[in-house]
Length: 222
Image 1 (tube, helix red, strand yellow):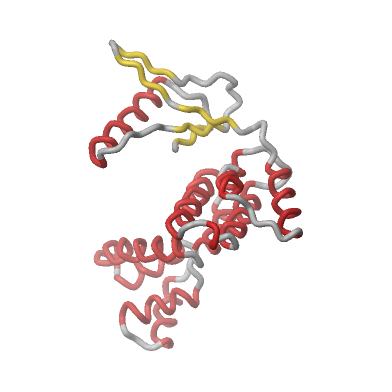
Image 2 (cartoon, rainbow, N blue to C red):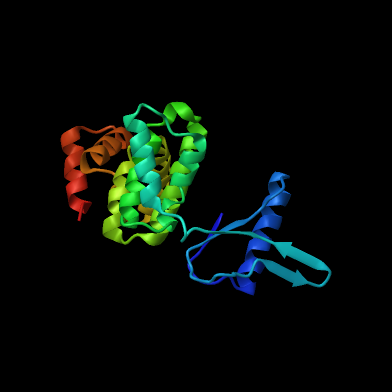
């Protein structure tokens, strides 16, 4: 998946082609690139012709779709005891790019809630991938204040745990130069981890008491 808020240029297509070639070579798979457009261009460029080669991408434009209608239908179904289909869950991933009265951060939060309440309908890996798509869109389209709300929700999921652990590893690497505690605390804050949860992370990482952990965090929790 690629996301473009402007028109698709020839340079974009060359870049997509490079990604496809590298992914196909490394993982021995066929690759198709879907470009999700939020631009107003009605006929975006989808073909790159160079020499005897022709490269194509699939374009998805969603301005004509209404996220309000999707949320309304899923809410009415839930009130009648009907569970969403997998197709419904996939549609939720694209609500940030649809039209609708709700702000993008509200759509993402609602979609994350519905996904979290539909865990029995999909595998754990599918859930993590869906959450990752919404997180990617949030990171691309939201400001810092709006993104913090999404991060708080993601932090409570399995994906969030993975992001935090990866972030802590990077924080430790960064912290080797500027103080390990500071690196971990700042990384947890960036990822939307709460103060209390960061206390637990520091306690576990360094084997110290809660009081000592809180003293460390207060120094860097700016």
